[in-house]
Length: 430
Image (cartoon, rainbow, N blue to C red; front, side, top):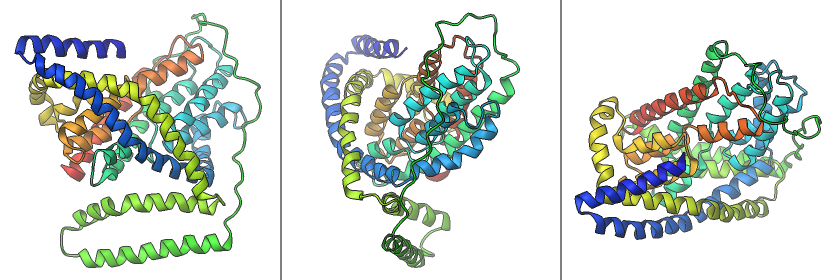
């Protein structure tokens, strides 16, 4: 599908430019768009190295294990058909914990393992079982605690408050996941599994059905580490009280809270990740170096996608076609509080992660990362996963022909997530 979208953008740009006399601008935009994409990735490497290094410290310090333990009781209630000690349960917990922490690369192998193990329990192998559909619905709309990728892009583009999309993203992903889960339970009887379908292929080999691996026990914090951790938080609490006392009365309470959060969140978040590592006995600097190295691999992976999508959008914008489309759509979406400039982000996000990433970057560059549209684009990007990719990958890996109501549940979650992200951005920054 992305092939057709990208080709359509390129053709529309050139054909529209041919009729409007903007061919020279389109030619220039093609060359500058490619250069800008490379410059962006170079600037992004440093920010990604910082965040990936800090996240590795927290992960090694036991943050992933803590999220696993928090998710386990919830998943046992949501998936009563899956035995507690079955490998599928352990793989699902690891997948969703990784997604919650923004560790997408780590989440995918566990997701594939979970689908293969759930297929072992599936009485209708060609049609997705209820646990499989529910797992897909949660996975494709997973709550995101740390949208580090979007924060990194905003920081690399010069945002003065790159973390400002955190609250809208958290609210949006919570709403999208809740909606997808609710739709699953409402629709599952309308779309029963089909026993008449023949499987595509032999069931996938999920590997030996061993018990799920328990989280590695981390060493307890030393008395010195506990003293450092407690002293840091006490000092920050005192400093926060003094700061609020200084600014009290200078603005409405909500504005003071919002501005304080925007100023304090990112430094405290970074320090908190390091203190989690310290509590887990991690050699924080050495582990952070290991995590930072991953930034260069990520940059190499996203560079081709960004170059091609940014060139297409730059050509479309230079031709005038994008402005013409916005002028047509804005009277419809504007009264609803949704600017038409952000519509390409909402349309492409369920289809392509790399494509929507490029659209988000283009919107932020065109309107500014701290503009309302720039903040909304970041919140939309973080509010849901790439629905069609997730469904295609996971159902294909499990050799399932009939996804039943998985697509409806996921798309319903996407729509609600976009609506909540828009409302939250208006509430906080509109």
